[in-house]
Image (cartoon, rainbow, N blue to C red; front, side, top):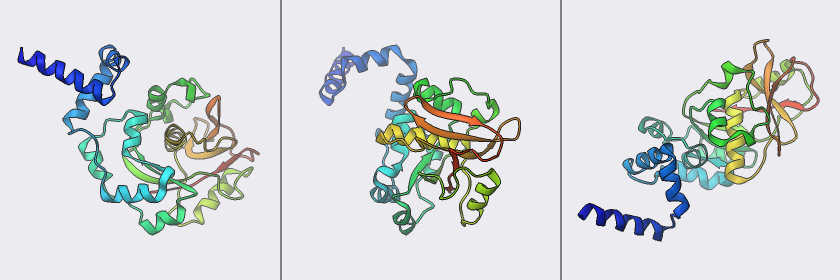
Length: 244
């Protein structure tokens, strides 16, 4: 009897806090949602960002995709080890101030392109099957990255070796992987409603089975495109950079 009263009280409090009957129905219909909710409770409720994360969010504003956003939009369930590894950022406030308008700061979790596809749904992808099977299942690790929101100057319409040379001239810069680009493009759009790389593609560090670098972008209403062609000049494909 006591447990029943507690459950009724909990139900009443949840309704008062804003939960709807439709939300309750989702909990009863979807085991994965129940699992995430229980995990959330057991970890002590809401995630508390570190002071450096709070400071970074203040500087970057909408160009910040943190642990909270990854939980909300990609439905990640961070481990204690991952949260600890992301507690401190590898970038100084001075660095963030310098790039706050041209880069996105992302807490990237080990999600493959295939997993992102399953989590957000097919409407965000122009490609509904992946010919780059090996690259679509690679997961990576949890880490902070700064990703440039636009192609590098003078990189569009160049051969890959010329584009790569632009990256090599910038200390600390690298070419993003396929999964990092998909994570950034879709995560940023889900969190801010801003589409990046909407009219242009950018080559990644990953190659297809023929040795051609995979490019991603042209993210319009039909979804993000993932493709690969010979590493020659393509008038709508450039390259961007990432820092870790």
